[in-house]
Amino acid sequence: MMKKNKKIHPARFARRQQEIQAEIWTTYLRFSPSYEIARQIRAKELPKSSLKKMPADFGKVLQVYDDFGDVRFIDFPNWYFENRRRIFGVMPETPHISTITRLQKGKERELDKIANDFFKFNVMHGLDMRQRINLVAIPLDKKKSELMKEFSEYLDKHGAKAPDPEDTKYIGLKGLQTRATINALKVIWLHAYMPKAPLWEIGAISDVSKTFSMKLSSLKKTSGNEDARYLMTITVAKLFKRALLIAENAAYGRFPSDKPTSSTLEFDWQSLTKLLQQRKTKLKLQQEHYF
Image (cartoon, helix red, strand yellow):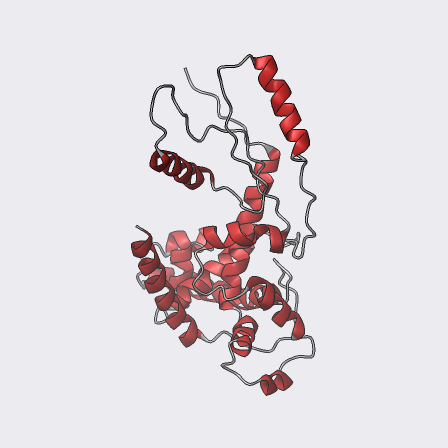
């Protein structure tokens, strides 16, 4: 007998969608030429006088940088956990009453075991320290009615209430399709990762066109796929332009959007290739250190 798929709660689904959008947003920020200029200015790698060469509204990019920070080498799940509420106004999922550890009758209270159980609980459930959480000892050798009365009085005393929602600084826009946003991101990421690959090959690997990708699946030049290579090259070139607009809009606090901006900067492919190599090395070292 087949098991029925459990439906995802709408609120949990919405939070997951917000997290995915935030991850794509921060990825685009890594590729944004304007955001990199903002990083260099804040890191004092560029003099403030360089602002004179930037558009009049470049202050918006600096504000976004001050909010998001240096996203080049972040481990996104940890970064999002720390910043989701402050930047995106995403309230963490309300925790439930849970058992962390049990103190059994007649056994010595081992503080190491209690601390270890708390650590494991925190790893599994990710306690948000901005929420008010009390660790409470509940004696189970009492009547349920007595416990309910005491617990109700305890909650009244400690002022249990739902937190007020925080103001949302950045809200994802609607209009630009997710597929278009991701396709544009895939081609610039692959081009930075494989700078010597022809554009049609970048398009075939990233599968941005079902029609042409099928004809170019072998990644080999043939007389039979000449038209497909030509059309795929045009497709990828257009996606480069769209990706630049999305990245620059992201730096100005608008995402996802491919509307024209005041920026005249272009992708620095050599720097982006170097960045991807550095990021791969740093994240690998972070994982090795963690484990």
